[in-house]
Length: 138
Image (cartoon, rainbow, N blue to C red; front, top):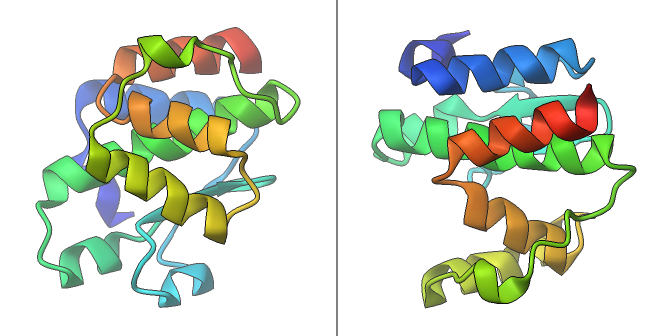
């Protein structure tokens, strides 16, 4: 899997924890034909759309890790019986473009607005992602 080449050490640890929790990791599967998707965490897998990130001209190191952190947050949601973590919203501020990303994502996914907000907030907090994975999945 090509995306593994771009992961930070904690990104590799997060992927290992996702796999240990029973969620296989896939890359560039049929779901990724929609060029708007960088990844997806669903009921039985975590998907990274490396080709979409690469073809879009995005920074592979940044966006692959950010996507792993975001989708792994959704895996932790699933381990938490498909519920958000209920971090106080005032403790999870998002810039306007990320708030728009939340709105766009909830139109395309089964995740609640709250879970999307949590995932977008955690995209740059891999230590928190690893914490919720360990807390809810093990």
